[in-house]
Image 1 (cartoon, one colour):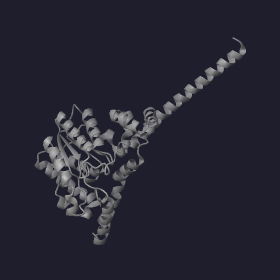
Image 2 (cartoon, rainbow, N blue to C red):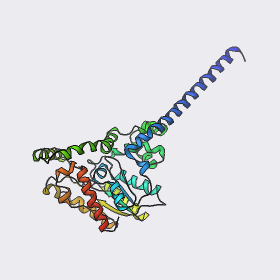
Image 3 (tube, rainbow, N blue to C red):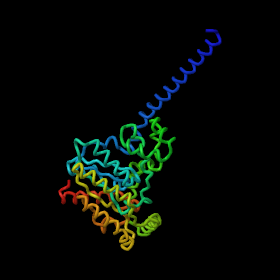
Image 4 (tube, rainbow, N blue to C red):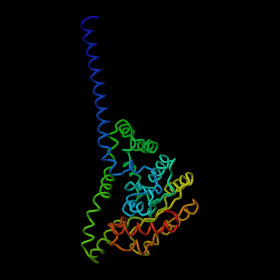
Length: 324
């Protein structure tokens, strides 16, 4: 071999080796970075910790986290209770959470599923489809794989393959929902002092209610067929696994009886689905839990006082029905 050819071959080998080393370094850095950050990511959702066998499984959006205290239910019943929620989760995502949980715990199934189904459950505007982006980080831990393999390509093929190849990139979930979750989990407690310190002020309450009403005035009762089917699918799953299901209408602040009566069409649909699927539709005393602004943080999330009262009433109702 002549000196020129030898030098050329040597350069090719050297550059090839450097490229391979660089790719390996990037690969290893990506995996190490994912391992380091995943713990913090999971603190926002606690899916890994809560994907454990329990007697009662509670699934929903941020509403259920603000309205029910799973730790109190577990302590007072003496049974395991786990709560899985993703801010903004629609019935499609709730179905995937239920499905994944039952699949992972098929040898130790819960006896009861409590599913959040408020009066906006069938409204795509209230619960947008984009909430699924929050659970992308669990893909490389073996959760939601089939679901995300279908959903992520809808964004773009580039997004899908970047998400598939880079573990750490998968933690770059939809920031709005991540910050919502941080807010739900950590910051709501900062308002307890204010609730303790102030007497109810009618003017302040009226201002809060007026603000809430403006936020919700664009919404109306909806019965989206796709979301209705998702609920049927969830209850089909629970029947298959022999798990009793409760469709819990979590409280939304009631602006007026007239306004609330418009949603009877949604409630009738929920009752029909429950009755036809061997489930229970449950709405706790609306006069008590949907009319006092002093028990709400905003129009769809209860404050700690409201949460305590609602949890106690829910526990009492479950005991009365021999479900807890």
